[in-house]
Length: 525
Image (spheres, rainbow, N blue to C red):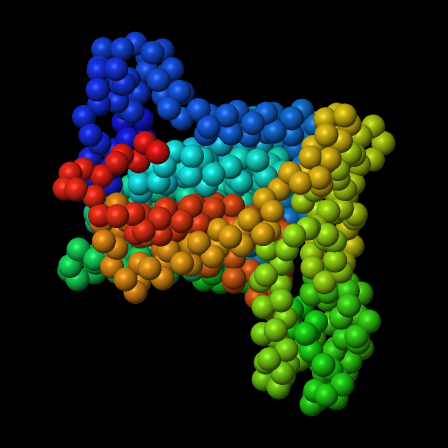
């Protein structure tokens, strides 16, 4: 994306007025200027987002200084060592292999931090293209640049930032022009399909994209053509991945998929459930339910895996029977459980709770984080990996490969600063996210019910609709399985732009009708 596009409006009726000799156009300077002069003009015009990018860069540099070679989480072993095959899509494994062929884990996180900065810049450009002012566009990307939880996941060997970058790339393609061409729709579909190989959630991202193309207008033939192109392109990487999986394992899937057993079991009232005698011991007590869905789903001490069952019975079959009975007999309890967790992202503070996945997993620590028995730091600061050959079976320990970056090192003063920043407000406040959500919903309703009155308000409203639809699909499905602050991170790339565009769309409708002539350029206010 080149800078002239930042000042190019989204439609013919939205062209920038001719700039005066005293004020170079927002394309980066007058023709004939040196690149340095153009850069200075660009920096002056976009000084706020430049300052935010600089602050985001500083946080990311500090994270790399604080932790060497990178942060390693339990799920990292799936991508480095093929642990728990089939549990998650393995597209990230291919990324790691490509980078580790020429670098180490430090190289991986450097690229991930650069991706975090790049997706913020891309979002800023897209919001400007829709007609928002420069300061509003900067507000839209401030969360992803400054949120310590985002910086922490970029420092971790996990696929999250790659998934976010693919979602942002698809969004930018869909929003870059007022009318989405078949070529742009296909490119967006291909990227969204590839995102499903990073996180399985990507397999449903085609839905909001297709809805947007159908609402966009331009005639039903154009809507059908672009939607079909996007859907077909989306299917290519998904089908290719599943075909390789079938050839290797006999399973035509992206992954086994998440299960809702922990969520459902935690919500159940076992005392009033009608269950077969063989299933009854698996239903947790209130004390066990208080430990939360994550514990029930994954702990070897959970009654789902520890309770005695009749000889010859299949435990997985009994767990499935328990889940089905709870959903069938007590659906309201399950719905209330999901709804309660879905609003946690809007809470004033972020505190630990047994009911949700531990938040400390996504917080900076003053020592190298360990997750026994999977990841430990032994004598000489050697990072040691524990790999299970069978679920809840024996662990086999070996040092992290030296080529991956060597021993664990933590710069304690820098790590302490990052931790203090994160815990003392260095994250996007829940009430602010709620305001973004309300503005996004309002702007979307305006789009669907009342036709915007000007080309600019239409582009703002349509952009709001797309971001809001993506936010809903990114955030709600994970809550059905299990709430985790990690799963809420995509809120940073979806809700703030949705809210900013929704606010701009609503304000544009309140302004008095202008005299015939071009609308103000994006970023001019």
